[in-house]
Image (cartoon, rainbow, N blue to C red; front, side, top):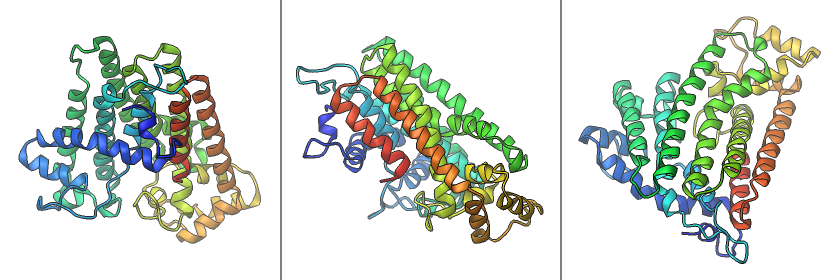
Length: 359
């Protein structure tokens, strides 16, 4: 399948059609990976992916989480070869195992995150740990991580590229763990003592690292040169920070969180939130009022609506919007530097905007 085939019928890539096509391409691989697990783990993972009810019976009408990372991998696989008309001709078939692997890693992290945060909902359904218990949720996540590694084991077809992707995936899982550790450490500190730079470092590891892996992995599997891989890696970093800031804004002001989690769940968990950090560091009277309102600590926060209004009034929302927009611009700049075939570039640009704007 070429990058053009990942586009809509008018030849203009649209994020929903790119995500839908990616879902169609990788779901068989995800089901194959889950099907190879022990029967109880198959049931738990099938529930997590939305394929089945808690008792293992099939579900109907459940909308799966869009496979963003897989779509980025498949589109990035158009980075290498170019036809006479400048359109990408490289098949995404070689990138399918890598695309499935990054989605499996994402779901490993999601299962563990829900346990660690005590978050009972994921995309509008009860989280796995709330249905089966924490032990099964942890085991299911570990099983998916193992399945991800098996997906990218070298097969001999393109050993150099496959080996590079395996090393990339291993480094990414390590960075995800390190980023989670750094986030937990930040939670022990008062938010006014956390800098924007520290926040960005955590966001880059927690969200950006897997986006870097998705983009760079697709390009590696397509045989792209080192310059392209490096540009896409930097693009993924900035895209991850932009998306995390956007999710912080959504958490406070969306009304109903698009992630399917309760609004303000991030703040209630005590995680670093850029609007709050920026508001507290604004140095204006509203920032001082906000700091005073948080003086009682996490045990006695202000009511959610009042907290959101204070952050907004102190300038936290405007600052977060500006930072997210700047990070997205940097991601797009790095995408431009990769000098990709036009169809590949346009498809990735659409996915970049969707990642941040959910548009």
